[in-house]
Length: 215
Ligand code: AP5
Image (cartoon, rainbow, N blue to C red; front, side):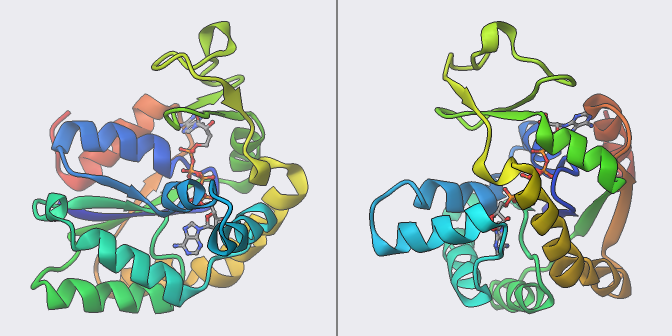
């Protein structure tokens, strides 16, 4: 399956992507994760990316399109993929369609995780991420035992962009630049909406049902 996961910050895209790729055995391509890996260095590019991430701004379309095009050219995507956090603008959606068309492919569906903003803000404010493997926890909804990562024992930290003022900016950016994709993909007959206002397992069940997959 070739899928895009769409939703506001904190809607649960990453959480659901991790669960689904275990089941359908395709790569999970998170552009946020790709960017966080790139920001780690000390190059001008790393510093530029850190500037976008830490202020809640989008990385320019041309850079993102190039990075995703290169990622989709890798052999492991032949059987499908879950794209998490891309596209985020109509220009990115058009670039993705172009890339897929050149590969003789189309998207199967765009899953839109719909969640009220105040719930998403609570999820982001309590998120803790493993610095080693990137696993996500939540201080209230999915608390880690012993305050370390249960999968690899890594230290947990709060993402720089999960600070209140940056969360606010990310929601503004979502409204300004990304929300139009709901209509864009609805008009293309690709959008599947999932009510994300429930615990992770219930949201997962809803998503499987919406995609026509067995539990
Ligand atoms: P990115 O990392 O993609 O951030 P985001 O879209 O804001 O999404 P999040 O990762 O914050 O949330 P999520 O929906 O994945 O929720 P999660 O499952 O983690 O991007 C970061 C930045 O990179 C952007 O701001 C931008 O600068 C840049 N960027 C990325 N892609 C780009 C692009 N295409 N173009 C330009 N720039 C780009 O869940 C959140 C929390 O809630 C966790 O603690 C989790 O445990 C908890 N949780 C999840 N589901 C549930 C549930 N059902 N019930 C209770 N708790 C839950």
